[in-house]
Image (cartoon, rainbow, N blue to C red):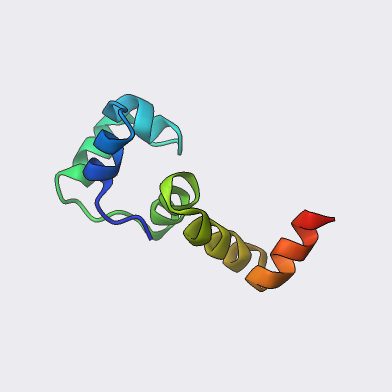
Length: 78
């Protein structure tokens, strides 16, 4: 799961507005999260899907669809 949002944002070369808008969060909301405010579970999931590793994103998507990662891979391969 994506944990240090600011580090990931800076490595991606994005400003707060660009980074947070990808998952539907305002710049001011993202700024609060980067300052230590608790990030809701739904936002953490979106961050993982958008900015996590491929394996993290695939695992999160499988959980959302209530299937195994292997079954999801098979469905995508069709």
